[in-house]
Image (tube, rainbow, N blue to C red; front, top):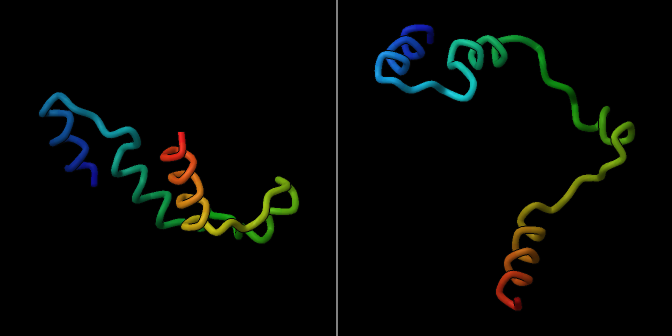
Length: 62
């Protein structure tokens, strides 16, 4: 992963999050179960597809 970051930098570009850092994050237990955080943060599960459709309808209706 560090090689990918180096090659990208050699081309004058940079990832928003370095690939090596992303790989490290994915390999450790760094994620929370949403069921544990939803009550604390005060949000509920959403039907993403239905929300997207509703948003598009509102955009079309103007």
